Image 1 (cartoon, rainbow, N blue to C red):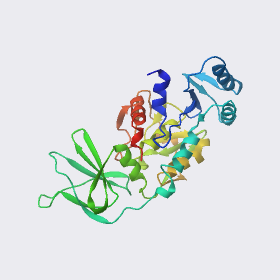
Image 2: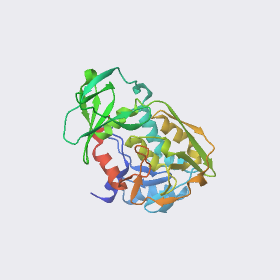
Image 3: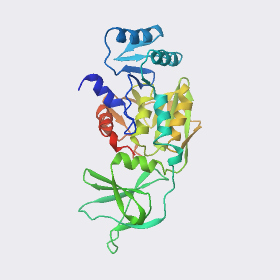
Image 4: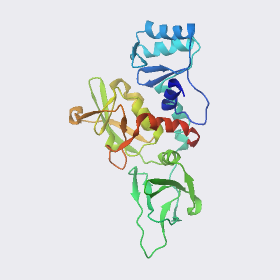
Length: 305
């Protein structure tokens, strides 16, 4: 696999609904990368567009500004190139996987018989708390639980995890983790969380967000203005408040301007190798190596729901 193909696998997460692959992609906010193999005049044209409109070469990316990004995209499209921006990716998700028409309520409560397996621990996804709740069993009862239809449950045996959807009659339908979180996100209850703006930065309290599907979390990571993170908050450009608000709305979260200050979260860390994701109210839970996470997402495109 070439370096460009690997970058494509790391960043591009559209799913099985389309085979579309861009020629040029906004890999991170205001940072573009050329995915298509270009030679001669083609490569020179693309590079000239970036240079003439003020973009600079930086760590393998073409870095631009808010003032020039629209002009660059328009000029490249005029040249016949497919350009993928983060704004377009969010719009696509809103039209398809996270369309308001797909939102639903959980169904009636039914008894769910859970398969027995030694040392198995079962959890259900609480769509109001957006966190996993443990299912406790009494020795005098049959191994099962009363849950609403449409609930996502998880079975853990050591490091192995299996996911299921409670369907009509209390039966369990196997799911991948990715599909499970996508389905659960369509039933998440409404939530309002605070954001703050200081200078050119916008921050959202990550520990109030709860579980997020990979599709949403990957865009949060790509919208960051820096490789650094601050504990317990997501950082964005202040000019992206409308775009960030639209992204969070896909999982039924409304942003409201708060009074907290970014200086409350001064501790920083580099994220060259690792990313951190809020999971069961623990923001600093170390996840897999950054590139491997996105590569896995791309290889499993058919798991999209």
